[in-house]
Image (cartoon, rainbow, N blue to C red; front, side, top):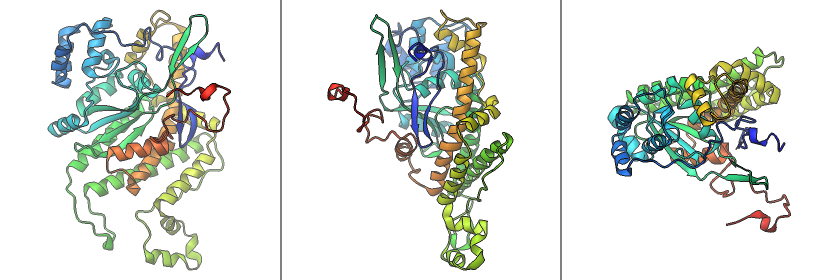
Length: 445
């Protein structure tokens, strides 16, 4: 294992769906730049701040002045200036402007009519050693030509650090050291111009899948912005077309589609015993429905039984059946079905090369193998995150469980999905029962 260590990402995620590596046994290209510290910028901070005050337009002005040849890798000092201006490491590849103040992002969203893509993460997006997922975003998603163009045109970008990312240094005792981060997950929230969440993408998605979901959320936001809140008419069981009900309908349809797609994937890879999925109820059961269910044969009717169970119980039951039919080998086969959603474009590949140009060339077979391994890992993360984690978020929106504010939803996500609650300062890395034989259990506070 020691000989393989330099080629494996020491990044794991503790999630409701289990413990799995975010992307295992990749090359150190993405992880290990020649220097972890950001290079110093030769541009005065006042100049950078002046450009930054102009937002994406200021970034475009800076790029037109200082990077006339977009095909060449800028010098380290210029890359550092861009990182400071964009508040994103590797900004030269993505050319995306990020707000770090949500209030400012909301003001820009109101002015432009665009939704907000708000990233929550461990560590800082403008530092090399942020959490593993955010590093993969900077390589696979943000530099992708189609993704970056869509984000520039259609979204206001914002990020916020949830807490510092744990780091570990492995000292080989002969002067060689290997520095990595441990654990930590990230999530992209789609917010309306008031900063209220309408959707979320937990963890790593392949660029094609990521772009598709961004487009769906953008359409949802546009439709919601055109509607006005209306009074509810529950007694008539009529759902008026207002933003709240539109949001509910969206998440119900997405949750249903996700569970049906999961079942379809199981069928496509040859699973014989397929789960029988119950339809999600449109509303919680009334007292009359409950009374009817108490009598005779009506209890065996699936639609009514689904209503009696309630949305949460029905969705949980469906998910449990699907999970029971999906072991590790099956997950890999499902990921293979969706490999086309996790393809790196030329921009991302060039960024990978630039991070380890001394070791690889574009025609290098080892580089091609690394790209393939990364894409395979992304495809697996994409389906697991979509089927296990995002489906739970859809359900929370339907239940209106801590989804009114991004702060409340983010707290719930990190506690219940990522299993790294604020109450655990050690992020699950310290066991209360395992004995280490190290003085004070190796803790320093």
